[in-house]
Amino acid sequence: MGTVEPQVATTAETVTADGFQLVIDALKLNGIDTIYALPGIPITDLTRRAQADGVRVLSFRHEQNAGYAASIAGFLTQKPGICLTVSAPGFLNGLNALAHATTNCFPMILISGSSEREIVDLQQGDYEELDQLAIAKPLAKAAYRVLHAEDIGVGIARAIRAAVSGRPGGVYLDLPAKLFPQSIDAELGKKSLIKVVDAAPKQIPAPEAVRRALDLLKGAKKPLIILGKGAAYAQADSEIRNFIEKTGIPYLPMSMAKGLLPDTHEQCASAARSFVLPGADVVMLIGARLNWLLSHGKGKTWGGKSAKDWGGQKFIQVDISPQEADSNVRIHAPVVGDIGSCVRAFLAEMQSGWAKPPAEWLNAVHDKKTGNIAKMAETLAKNPSPMNFHSALNVVRDIVRANPDAILVNEGANALDFTRSIVDMYKPRKRLDVGTWGIMGVGMGYCVAAAVTTNQQVIAIEGDSAFGFSGMEVETICRYNLPVCVVILNNNGVYRGDEVNPTGRPDPAPLVFVKDARYEKLMEAFGGVGVHVTTPAELRKAMEQALHSRRPTLINAMIDEKAGTESGRITSLNPTAGKKK
Ligand code: ADP
Ligand code: TPW
Image (tube, rainbow, N blue to C red; front, side):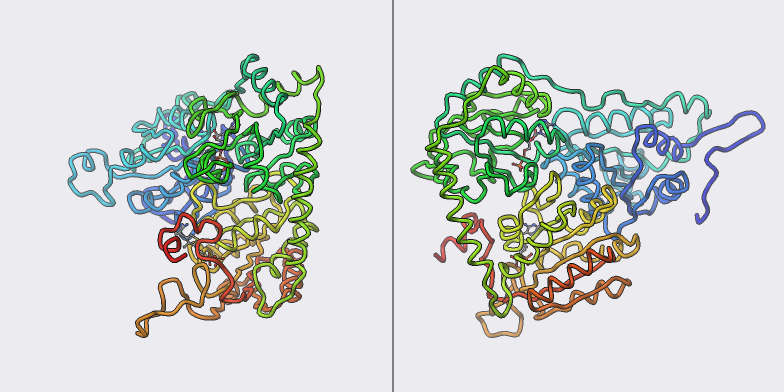
């Protein structure tokens, strides 16, 4: 321990390569240049030697955050993000992020060291014994174990293909401790490695599926297009924009698809969401699932009479997964393929001419949208004391408009919902948030990966509860001196901070935190800049300084503790809050 080992061992007769080296070489051969890790037995030397060999190794304080970083690196780059952990507890800490990657369709590989197979299988009690492969399987798109050094090349190649091809997802790769010191002839080792060719092959949609979809869209009186994060992932930005503009159809971006076209685009219907969903007659989904975030395509949101009623829309679904269609409601026109190829096929087919949707529909959407934007502008212009979500986010909105290349990381409940609706995004893949599960804890891991993979300024808008899940990684942000500005919208608790313990006993209510906590001091503890602000003017100044300096900064923005709704916008899913009404 403690020294960098030589890359190859030389004896009198042969030159050998060990398992450590082959793993590093296999990753490098496939263009993987960054690992999000937390060292320990048996992968300590893997982190050390990877760094010595030119791989960027970002070392975290908790594996969950390393895993979230890897997952979002996968989303941003289309290459699998690599998370490297120790066995049993480290693996389990990383597993959350692996499941998150699978759920969100992000390509990621969780590589965990593991204990001795013979002892694990007989349950004889090894150091950190756990049957990791079996546990990972149901949560991963694929899971593999490599036992012999000569199979490392195949193991890494299979993991990469599984992560990025088709619908992307999380892959688990189990590397037992005994694998790393195994030596094989260096030449043989080199030959055993595989450079994966065409890891995510194009999937061309069938011409009849393309025509069926366009015929349906053409015949619509009130068409709508919904862009999901699959569309953002696909990196077919100009084709998607051309397609939307050529159709003239209003579109709604899902949260992480915001900015694919600027939110200020005249066809963007975000400000008229509750009008266009029930109003539309034909809806084209591009890289978005009809899951809970879209009320499963039915119920009152879609104009249905009750929670289970269909609203009568006809759906076109563009997705790489052939199994996705009909998951919730009937899909009249599934188009299976990668989004770039599908949209190109639509554009080619539309050469023969395309009429814009009826003016009646476009005008109705426009009027609704203009009215709602005007109402919001009034709210944003207010300057209440204490500061509330709106007055704080009005500042963030201006800062993002002035810095459209900055990446916005966002988590919380109210902090999430208000930011999503108030802060316009102008470029693709600039908004990263809680995703399909609405998960808290992605914040600081996402910030690290966003800064590292893009070198852009990162702004994180965090609820005070949300921040707590990954807060210790501000040390990581300071250690690597990343241009991250964290803004905590601090209302003293989960959702809000004014609840009291009804018994009168000294324990605070379960949703309430220490009042007026000085989170900014956490950043100062590691050499970053901490700022405590109570007004929009102070917030603006602090954010401008952070972006100008690119220094790690944490702004503790004090918000009215009475501001905020329980569960934010999803109160309807909360049984207790529902009963209270
Ligand atoms: P959102 O949460 O933004 O609505 P989802 O995560 O529900 O988005 O849906 C993303 C969809 O995009 C998934 O069904 C996935 O199969 C699909 N997808 C991901 N990448 C591609 C791609 N390159 N081409 C086509 N579909 C894709
Ligand atoms: C892994 C449940 C959803 S939102 C939230 C929690 C705990 C925090 C809301 O408070 P916050 O934001 O962040 O201060 P705000 O603006 O409303 O005050 N554990 C996980 N994921 C989720 N979603 C939860 C718990 C939850």
